[in-house]
Image (tube, one colour):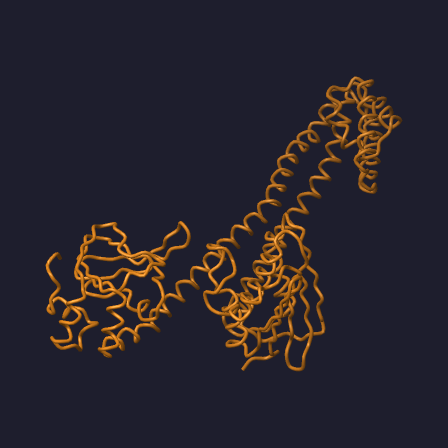
Length: 465
């Protein structure tokens, strides 16, 4: 579209629907047509580009976060774009990209404001779209924050599950090896001609070593190393090949030279098999303990996830306040790893159960605790206190971090306001938490902050309508 703009061209745009030809002529005089090739950026986030009119082609709206872009909607002709940011005095909050070859026109911000105020129907039509557009943007940002949080949570849970799962896998693989050793021992005894009576005595020595391993406390590293060296020396004297393979479990069982000599006297040429049998049994017991501990950790995490998911229902449910907070802490445990952060719980366990919307309350604890972790960085203490105040439960979540700057405190619950680095937060966490507590649970969410101390105070009625 290289020719001059006409009133007939503008008549196709619904923004000017109520204007007569004389009024349209004023608009046509300040409208500059242009074209855009497919893939061309026609307007970028943060820029003041005036108002765009689209006559043919498709324009894609993109949400921009750092180097990442996300499609948010497709504009079909004939339509207009950017008028809301022009009238509200802001910059464009999205990127506009031509998806196909497009015919467009541009009205400068100054001309658009001047004429829009002269023609109230245009101004009114633009302002009538503010609420729907903001609702869509808020919904998209909220959904993006939920997906981001879910991705981080999933990655953390996968890491938490991976550690005990890997330990269990290693223990199971080693268990297979020791079972082979144990299962081959009887054959070695038979081949070596060990008599029944001597075999019974070997069983007694085996049981003695296993009982010692069960009852003994673990040696400190230096004592354990000394005990292993002594056993290796004596096993070499007995002609045992690769004695270092047996030294650690035998030292754990507390065997001495006399015990080793008795085994050698009874087993004869099968001494290596007898000692490997004892070492394998002691090792198997340790591996069984590792498997038990690893699977218990996995069960604990799965139980926490199930509790978190059970409370992730929107309807009113009766919940133990402390169980919900502890479950959230368990779910966020991966955020604390590798840092010198301490969590102090000061609970009033006499509090009755609360009737709440479980999923939403989980979101409150997750946002507040996660914010505290981020505020502290690598060092500090998070203190969670619960108490009763009449018909309400009070929860204080405190940290001894740097505090919230005074100039930010009046904006802290505003949507899209964030003190985090670009890409680290959307500014919806605290706004969402406040909406859940105040609007959905008839409670209150306040805070006080100074350098070295920040506390968020949550007040929740025990029952909901």
